[in-house]
Length: 82
Image 1: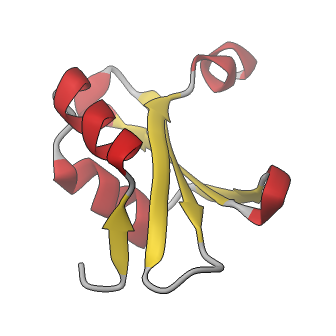
Image 2 (image 1 turned 90 degrees about the vertical axis):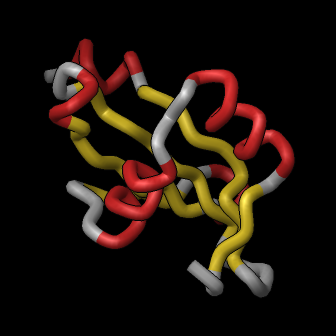
């Protein structure tokens, strides 16, 4: 997607955790919910059925162009709340 770039950290996390890019784009394009985090970063959250229904969080700095995907991870805290 041309409107986004991955930070070095986000690229490392994708590779280390073997997370498919498709899960990132699915989360950004069709989140189950969004939140505003500290520093004005947007948090996109989506359940990933292929990963045991766990919640996937993609954090984006939307104040830069192109928008920067700062980090991404499976959020265990949300799993405990459900």
